[in-house]
View 1 (cartoon, rainbow, N blue to C red):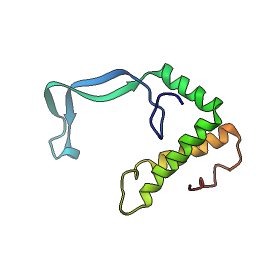
View 2: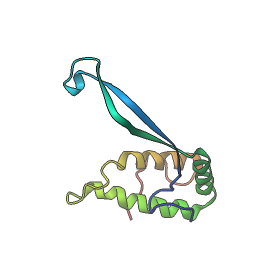
View 3: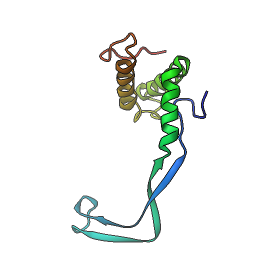
Length: 120
């Protein structure tokens, strides 16, 4: 299995996106155009190494076992969103379902993109 976590494949950080200042406004309870200058730059985002992302995509396209393992682990994680005692994965459910639909359509595998994935 390529380097990765239980439910995803990881790519190295290719670049950090930093800012020295930000303009805030009424949505932050400040006057429109309020400028904040940070004493030191703040990291606001990261850019993944696109070559590694491409290699992971090829691995997924070629390896049905890898797709199955990641899919099963993702379903287990997403199912936590429906467990009132565990809110750890509530933000992953929509993305997971979108990925399942796109995958099924691209691979032309059984299971229409309209059918929900089966639970383990």
